[in-house]
Length: 107
Picture (cartoon, rainbow, N blue to C red):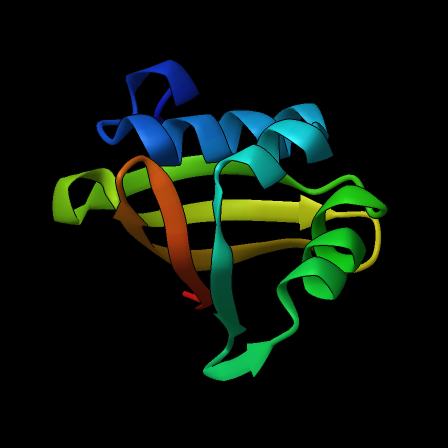
């Protein structure tokens, strides 16, 4: 069972998932704080390089299974052309409508 993107609780996270699923780099970038950071499986990564490789150039897509922490924690089925489909956990830190950090990894 998945949660429709439009039903996600946190408006910034909802916009991030919408941008990812639409392949919209510009909209995604607009949602990031200037000094935003991220990690994948516990290791900090270069946010621009990682999102290009893992999301945009490989057609990443999220189907959210559940949310927690007011909508800032997600468990989702994430798929892309590189790795196929996997169950992932995401946590977003948001300030003033901008993502300051997100962490993802296998769930």
